[in-house]
Amino acid sequence: DNDFSVVTSTSTSNVNQSGSYTNLLPSVDFNIEIVDNLIARASASRTLARPDYGNLFASTSVGGPNRPTYLGGIATGTQGNASLLPLVSDNFDLSLEYYYKPSSFVSIGFFDKRVRNFIGSGVFNQNLFGLRDPSAGGAGSRSGIAAARLAALGAASTDVNLFTYTALLQQNGGNTAQADATYRANSTGGAFNQAYADNILKAIDLYGDAADPLYTFAVTRPINNQDGHIYGFELAGQHFFGDTGFGIAASYTKVSGDVNADIAADPSVNVFALTGLGDSANGSLIYDKNGLSARVSYNWRAKFLAAVNQGNNRNPIFTAPFGTLDFNISYDITPNIALSFEGVNLTSEPLIQYGRDRTALVFAQELKPRFLLGGRYRF
Image 1 (cartoon, helix red, strand yellow):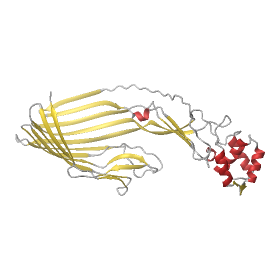
Image 2 (cartoon, rainbow, N blue to C red; image 1 turned 45 degrees about the vertical axis):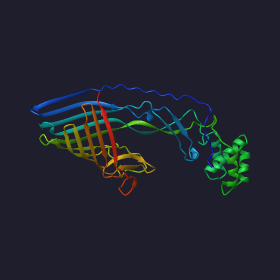
Image 3 (cartoon, one colour; image 1 turned 135 degrees about the vertical axis):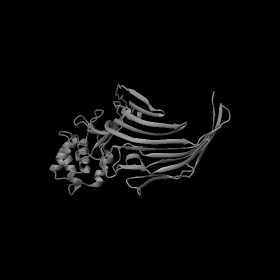
Image 4 (cartoon, rainbow, N blue to C red; image 1 turned 90 degrees about the horizontal axis):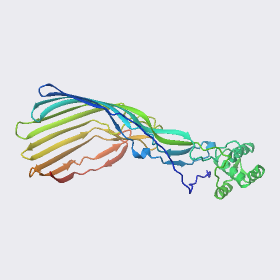
């Protein structure tokens, strides 16, 4: 019954936005051999990552309210933001490495990243394209006069009544006496008869005119509104057994920060959290001698956040812990030619994603092993 129409114009106009930024990106690295084969490394840097191009587009779209704005409807719009700033990260890394024999080492490293300008969403109340609101009930407008007359007649303030009476004003050139008479003849219990209202709905469309106030759209657009702190450590090691060519390697990375998803967050409000962060580990058995290189590895990834604010309840989506057994074999036929054969996920580990709780399954995929055969030629 909300027939205050939104129509698409046959004419077009340019939408222009602009943005610029200047960043200094310093970087400094230190390597110190404290004693023989014990190396300390420290680095500090500033890096940036540009926003996704989809967020920078200057495109603007509008949508009409689902009911008259006089009765609480909200007109919405979406807009890109060419003025978005890039993500800027101040990074500090510190590591200690001990090479106790050729090709064998142990190391520990720490990292700290302070990231600003994460992109979220903001809602701004503004007019777009000079559009006017025929349903606002503004003083002196058709819908404003309709609202006043309906109140004087003791009629209910409903979508149907407001539209139908406003349409009658348009049909009768603003003659309120004629509209009042039509209401009395076609209403019951303070409301237009539905059959009559349906006929008016089919016959008349209402568009904004100069007497209507400007539309106020709730425009959603991307903005820089979040900062984050990410930190953690990494342990790694590798050991070869004499000159046999056999060895082992392993690493573990622990990631923490203040950008995690809160599963108890209000489902009516968007939340900010950084996706893709999670602990990881791997271990490998190695053979590397006489041109033959082989590695069997187990790679493990802890639970991590894959997406946020999904669906009407703004649910987070988590990827369950995931581990794969892989292998890689390569052989140097000549100094210039090598062949390789690789297998991934030999145990057919499935991919599972869920919502706020592990029982809230969102996605499950059976995965099969993948095998890749390749070759390399060095010029």
